[in-house]
Image 1 (cartoon, rainbow, N blue to C red):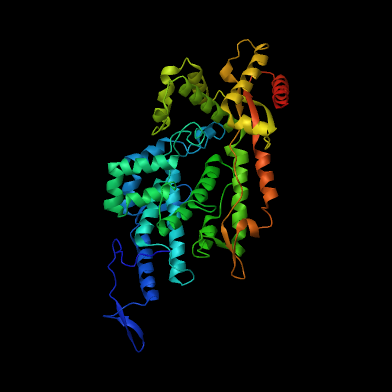
Image 2: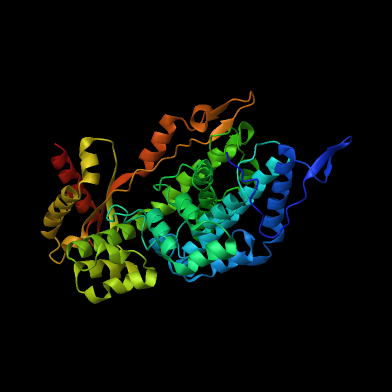
Amino acid sequence: MKIDLCKPTISHDVPKPRRKSNSGWTSGDGFYTMASMITDITLRQIAHLTADFNETVRDPLWRDIPLSKGFKSLFTSRSMQKLNRIKQLGPAYLVYPGAVHTRLDHSLGVFHATRLIILSLLNQIRQGTIAPAISEEGIRALLTSAMLHDMGHFPYAHALKDMVSKEHEALGALIIENDNELRDIIENQIGTSVETVCKIIDTSRPSEDSEVGFLRTILSGTLDPDKLDYLSRDALFCGIPYGIQDASYIIRHLSIVKEGLPIGMPIEAIGSVEHLLFAKYSMYRNVYWHHGTRGATAMIKKAVQLALAEDLVTEKELYGQDDESFALLFQPYHDTASGELFNAVRDNRLLVQQAAIPFQNTLFHQKLYGDKQFRENLEMAIFNDLRKHYRSLKPHEIIIDIPEDVSFESDIPILREDGSVLPFSQVDELFTRDVVKTFTASLRKIQLYTPGGIDRSLAHQIFIGLITHYEA
């Protein structure tokens, strides 16, 4: 790991060098020992992250979140405030009315958790329990990346990722480097490099800088600040207990267990990793993949898919929208299938789940998931059979929903009592590969959605019959 021993701090003078006397190292002309220099630099970094962060924002999850003047400017910038108009959980508020928190809330929380992680690592460096790993500019770049990590998000970005050509991280990096206000704040008020920030956020950008690689692992990993915030925040606003994390315990135990590896944990804290994976499973089961949330999401996906196919909107128009402007895209097309679906979601007139079968890793199920045309053919066959009984039924009101694959595996390094370091999956006795597969299999289902007035047993019978026919 690199540490920039020559980089000045933002608001603290560099102490004079010390020279060796009979009683040890003293102030005056001469040279530091490496350990002395590291201690002094680390203390200045800790002092900056505490004394200079004297403006607070009140948050329902973390309570007081301290900001420096530079980061307060970043938080109040136009592009950041736009995130306050994008719901963090999309249509989940239709199932959990309290889930109206935003990408801005979450971004602020990720920034705060990142600052706490940095402070914990710096205290371990100061105490000599771990080697130096992060420079002054690296700290500023990481904190900036944490606050801006969701800059590329537009409404329903996760749900629509198979319809667009750019990942939200790449979009975010493009926005940051082309936004004059953000560039000015990052370079002149915070004092770090826009290029470095973009490389930390967008991991597809090549970087041979070992520190950038290390900072990426802090921002994105099994126990990263993103998960520490969103699992707890989503649970809080949905009013359920499943996702709440013991963040202070986790942050206190995160450590550089071996140089060249991502941050890890000692084996005595392995229970916190298990708890996070259980929490993630519970949140998927009860919130993210709740049948109501999935139904609303499937309707939005179908609306956008139809709008793109009929040239009502373009992919480029989806980027950079907030919830309000996204809705305006569909306003002129209220009498189209796309507009009807979008307005139905806005009015909470959702299609209902009529049938569900477990997704299995067969060629047929993989084709049904990956081949849009094949899935549409099956939807049309179901529509034709149901239309015989319901003459007012419309083709776009029949939707087959299949969630993407999700993993409950973890590769976080675990420091064992004998000093060896192994991945979590090789140490933990609970989250074995078979258990992880069972978790995923119990969640991922092929689901049929139709209007609520359709007889459930009839819809189920037609769905199962056609699935069996197509699979044969």
